[in-house]
Length: 237
Image (cartoon, rainbow, N blue to C red; front, side, top):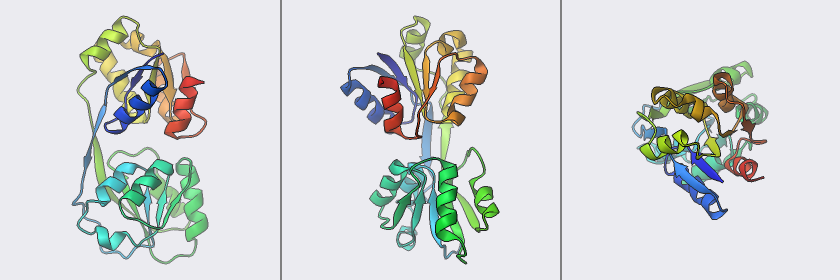
């Protein structure tokens, strides 16, 4: 199977290595470059806990000057990879929702109801949905601080354009809605949108799949759980 992985490095190369080990031919096109804002102004605190929806948040706060102040606080992570990154950054009390943002809101609501101290949401600059609003609706106070941003690639690599033009890709793996949108934009700019829509599109969640379906992709598959392992299993099932 000939695949394209569109997620940023180093995660993209790790995913590609996993797929190659299972017999796939893989191209990697990091459509986003993550910039960590390791000196972001966090506010005064204290906080009842930290909320993370991406491993990038853990990487950023792990290099922040106030890291030692934060690591004793409990962390609520959207999934296992984010939870693992938080532990690697020095946090000891980490709980994973093992799901999506809805699961995370449910977890935090059950664990923090009635707590007086606000939560600190370590967020990306571009966010899908309104996690802080959902938590506020559950009666929780939240301070949102941007600790990373994702910069869009200017275009697809020449090797990927050649593979698309020749119809040599069987599938494309998409890990975020924004990277799926950039994939479509880059293909449109290169005059290859029809070719880019033709392969199977394997998406981490329904939200990731939406722009591809709206653009006319006919073969869209959605992982049963928003986790890398579930997406890879979907590709190779």
